[in-house]
Image 1 (cartoon, one colour):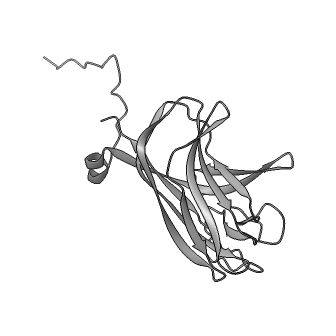
Image 2: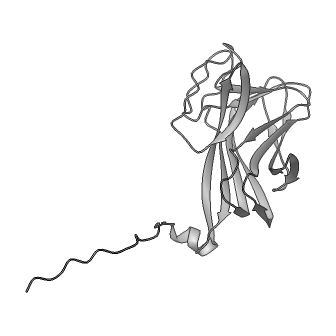
Image 3: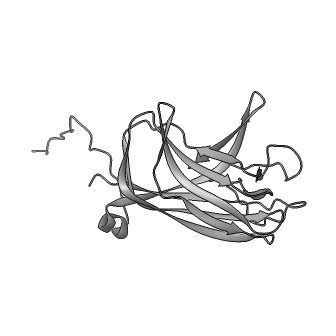
Length: 200
């Protein structure tokens, strides 16, 4: 007698895989890339998880370029798209980037923030990095000591502030292409790594 074929009435739930270290720490690290986008002549600074995006304009060509120029005493925010589901963040974030100052040694203030209903809240401690006139690569450690809860619709933000008298330039091309003259930033890929709490 043949064995009857039985089909399940419901499918298995989604399967997620994590590294052993992630499970041990109870976090999953998500990497986001700094990028610039333009729509209806409006330039936006964004965080994206898509590393295949490519900013094609060379530095010095137009405002949409592989390099962002942070003006003196200025702040620029790179925002992730609003979350579709609640998230929890705690641990240590890292901002990996290459930058150069137009003159002398300039200070760059780095901080992760949360935007909820238009209200900005600090997520990480503020870290200050000294940028020189020779392009160099930096890794800024951003401690998130208290668990931060993000509701649906909240936005994760990377905030960068220059408090000095000359511009600071850094990359905004997820592909990491060279910017060329007049800015000597060889690797234009800038990444933000964020520790999300895992539901295990």
